[in-house]
Length: 308
Image 1: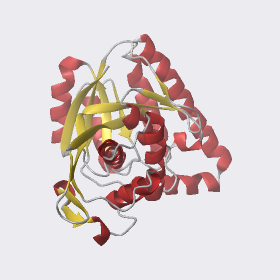
Image 2: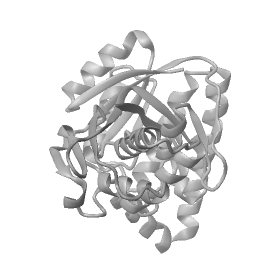
Image 3: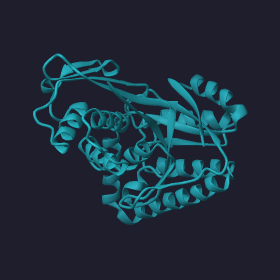
């Protein structure tokens, strides 16, 4: 049996603008993860057991563009595995689906590495990253590439589309509370809507994207220098621009305001928006208070995590 896991991720700054060539910052969230076990099977075929999504099936009974089936088919083609082996795949994840925590990319990374190890097909991190990005394109249309990058490398990442990812140093650990609205928010839809806005008035939205890019650039310096409290204002500024972009929602706005009222240093949505997660920068001693306030304001789940 071969086992592999991959963390979730949160985008700290730069979502959506990253699609248009501006920088974004993202960090792994090790409090949640996807895990895959691969073992040889006595049954004919490749059997998939993923109870979190109520999936119990043989590969050939699934549509070729099914999220899990597409990973397996494309990997086996890439690795030139023929005929297909008889395998049992056990897939589990504590990452909420369509919440901005990178659940799809995490499953892809974990599944790819587990299959590669089990079938003795060596893959470098760069190859896993590139493969996962291709899978992301199948399901998200024009993804930024940030999910697959930060999850593959499992380190804080400064990312500009089309350029090599840069891991960056955290000068002083800081605490983030993640709150889930409980509303599924497929990234493809919000990305497509932002593109429509951009196409209708490119000059205006390029200026907005540039402002977000400046925030991301400044945030990297702040994080590297350990000036943690300065991050809060940058998060608030980024959130205002995301609201202009129509990717926030009443539920996200309610949670952002609740976090600020409870003492958060700053708060914003994280990911595609229209639901999913928001994040709040907090002083460690206030994390539980902010978490409790977010639940009272409607959050379905909260995660307290430290960025190091």
